[in-house]
Length: 473
Ligand code: ADP
Image (cartoon, rainbow, N blue to C red):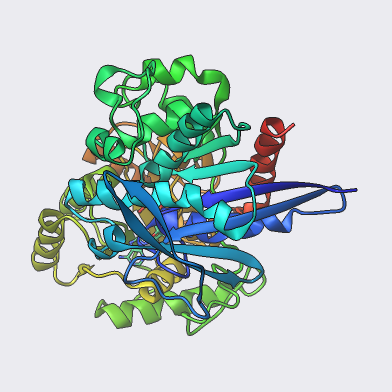
């Protein structure tokens, strides 16, 4: 008889219901890939739970019976819904704290704490109402990490069976705001943890403390969080938990991101019809209002406008390339100061640089298919998806040697890599790229190497399965 592992997978966002960033990509694919690993010996019943943000787009939602969770002297109502996505059961949790804070992530830390604390509490009550018991609770980042803390401490109090907790660490610096008072109002006590004092009231550290396994989104990042430079004050604690820390590289959706069938492209191509890629470059140049010229190097930035991503460094590098013949497109939204800096660059070099300050998934795909190089000079990069998508489309990445970028881009084999967080190091790497670009044969080898890489989720999902199996004996 086959063994079943039930996994309750919690995230703040998941494609195609709601997506803001890379977490949405991961939570949109990993639960389905995990279910797909089920075979005669093992069945993985993974179920996804998401907040019912006002912007969620979902069809065929069936309401579950209303329930509530105690808070202070009263109760907070939980409105839960269920649906399925290609066989994956999906649950949405709604209620006043989620409705009150419209966007997925707000700039108001206190409001976000209220929302995600409520979500995490309610999600731990959900199994009772669907008559299904998880063996593993799998949380992602600070938003859902309190579920692990509540799971552990409440079960301790009740003397109930241990349910394993796994947390995937997508971004360590974001730990959430002080939830001491919120937890107290829900009747959850703060435990004596071995966390640093400042961290004992923050959602992410509490979740890390309560988890049985901590998974960073790349092996490189798993190593980095143990260092003072990247450990955000938790490196001592994480070093104590080293045995339960590992790194599993995120994958990309190889079906959705496939230049041979991508509907966002006017001209599809594959390794066999590689020559057709140039048409995409020319179409992109035309669309952006740049000179149509297959020989001029076309650079791209597709990123949140955030200092983490080093876009400021990319802009300074481009500014310093006055005497070089190139074109560049910047696609991104975020920090208004960085958006302004992108606009200024376009004003400074109107014939060379185009700033598209918006979120546009189709344009992103057209850029991956048309640009020669993508620049990713990140200050830190837990995994990074853009460099993998770029390689899949034959767009060569120029990346800083950090986190998941270091794990996925091989110098002079699939891209160009630099070490120092300085714009001149990036300029040197871009110049090395441009030099190779003049040798068509060499360049095509780089592109083909990247396109041939397997960045599918299957291998990563198998690693997660191994972790579940080690926890559920
Ligand atoms: P992060 O999650 O840190 O933002 P990743 O590289 O892991 O960075 O994932 C970013 C994802 O969002 C990629 O799929 C990238 O193509 C996409 N993306 C980023 N900015 C934009 C934008 N302005 N328009 C469309 N897609 C974007």
